[in-house]
Image (cartoon, rainbow, N blue to C red; front, top):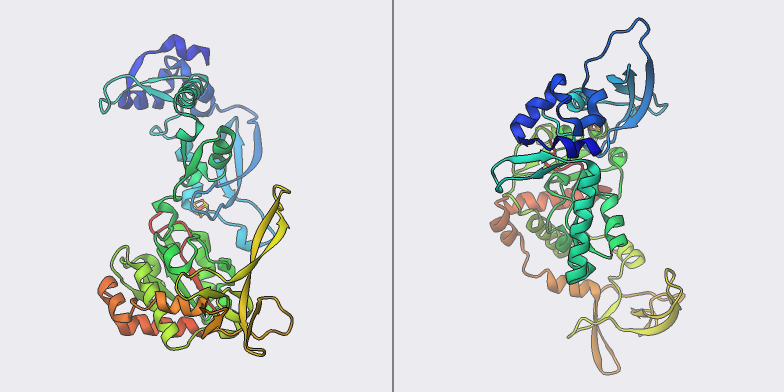
Length: 414
Ligand code: SF4
């Protein structure tokens, strides 16, 4: 690392890359000493030293293929799928195999660089990792000293930061967040439509074949998560209908059973139209809603506040006492508001009820009120998809079991 300080030759980025490609030049860029072994041409020896190393393709396309690598004389020479008794996970694609070119390619930047010219001038100098960490730490410290740790923001993104940025933020007391990124295929706005914004549905891709319909939004799995195409095709072979929502006629759309080409960024409107149609046509699973959701809970008809009583409890994480509100439902059997877990109670899913002179409705009714404007005609106007098509997708989805997938490496991960 010390050597980098001695060589401080100012390089612009292009010349740096050219130099990096040539082994003779490596002697001049001593800051790259740690990578010299990688970049040096393989030396033929009478008895090459060969070993096998195991790793995985970290977050490259979310398939995370497990790899078996052959290293000969200190140089990676072959990438193969790692043997696995479960053949679903014994894979590699051309991108994985070509990691050899990635590692030894002349375009790879292998050392930290500091800009030394005007922004945009392309003037950089190579610095050591120690120096890079020092600069970052000093800047963090200066910000904390001046503004406090909450002024630091650690941005999440795909690949490198998924696991470590939350840790870094918690160590520093910094703020952190952000979507995983465009390439992660996170459907923006789906939180409003579904109440959650997670990138994956709750089922794994291997369960798709048990579904009646798989509705894929914002993902092009046949190109962006190639190992999972097998599950896609297995599901189709098993009779699952795959419907792709995508503005583009992607490879995945071309293999799907139905492609719905909606306007970019309008998928939440498509889903809102679907939900309204399901509510209007009573295509919801009432038994499920009563047993597993908060839809029967009573809420104030004017304010939306949940009717309930406060209970003392202990916070599981902190061990400190806290209060939680236990919600009420309307018990159709007794015609009274009771705690939601009252044995023998028969909660009503819909209706207007008076408790102590105040009117209450159920959360299900509140949802219906809130969805009033999201008609099929409205959804057609926003998405450009005919109302009949939205209704058809909603009906087929409602038959169940169905899966929504809005992840798998984004619409164009590579
Ligand atoms: S499918 Fe290809 S790119 Fe994706 S993790 Fe596997 S080897 Fe890497």
